[in-house]
Length: 70
Image (cartoon, rainbow, N blue to C red; front, side, top):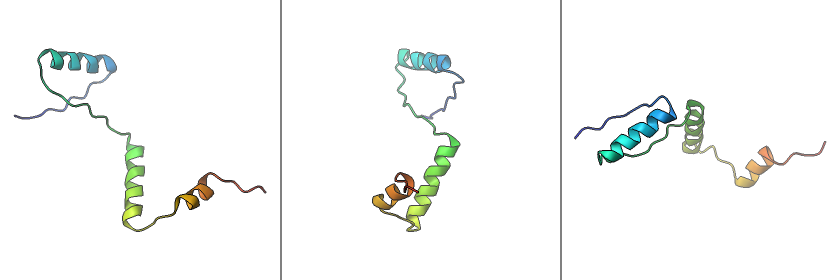
């Protein structure tokens, strides 16, 4: 059997489609799509990992969370 991808334009459409599928006993999976900027950021991180561009958690904390008093 083939699968279809549905792109509801609002919450009401999504609820209606889900209700219809449930009423017809059609199995479905919920999938959320990440915003493009999040996907791009994740991909950059994965590429850095593959290239061995790693830092320890302590280095990360110092760089991003701990500010030196000037």
